[in-house]
Image 1: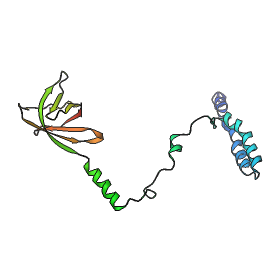
Image 2: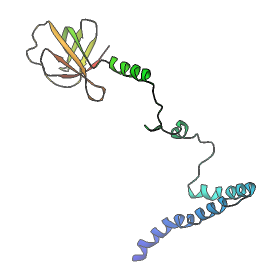
Image 3: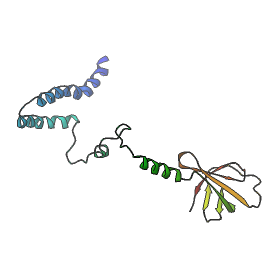
Image 4: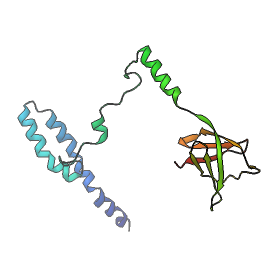
Length: 168
């Protein structure tokens, strides 16, 4: 009864036992001094390596990581001059994190979500299910600000913030 459990394991592990000789053969080929003989030694091992599942065909394209080259660490990154650093900081500060806009209309769709049309023509659509209470008839001012993971939050006149996306 025990042999029924052991035999399948032995049959499945046979290729692993057969591969144990390959690393020593590869190391032996690497120690050959003459380039032509070393090349012939490696060529003789290639069919065994392919059979073992460790080889790839030469027609395959190199991976994206191999094409990209070594990654730069903070220690190897290029050093910016003072003027380049100021320009990069100014560029980063140009990005707007928050904006206030007058609202032209607030409509409710069939799904119960709001569409906010601004006076400059922008249309923002609600994504979540937050309900706004006592909005009134306007005039409204909306504050749109960046939120986590590239999303936006819109607040209309001290109402709870709603998660929105820009339609146009």
